[in-house]
Length: 196
Image (cartoon, rainbow, N blue to C red):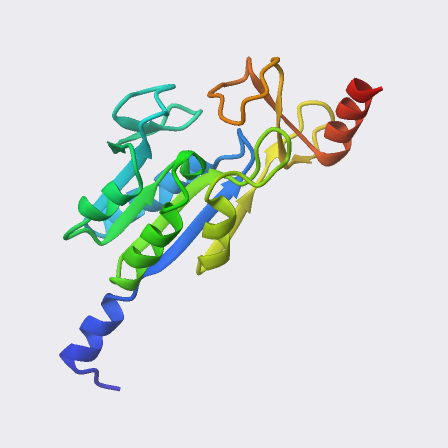
């Protein structure tokens, strides 16, 4: 079958939304970085964004727990992503749960413009509640990958980011000193003991 130039251009401009979600220490950022590096190898124009609040490892890079990194643009509001995405073929967004709810519409607009959007973030907070714009992003995504950590208590697949320190705020940056991955059984066991 012979395709016309218009048909080829139309095919190349198809946008999409890919969401990588899961608990802390599950490899979300590693997967985001892997996909973005492959897009760069394919000589696509790539830009990655992260929220200004996330300064754990670097102010201007997205860094995984394994210390892999990629240069990023820090934005304070999701609308800035639209302004900074002209002539971009692939947009990566890390720590999406920290963005405002407008991120859902921003991702939809980018995909409708023919841009591949890859989003990584926590789907739940430490109380197992849906986190920020992530539920909306999962709903509009073309593809959702839920990744899992390993439960530090029993070795099963872990879905939950259990907070180890006293702090009831939903947003609290942290690492292994502040959070641990737990499976459902270990999470329920720990939190039923606390309530008793």
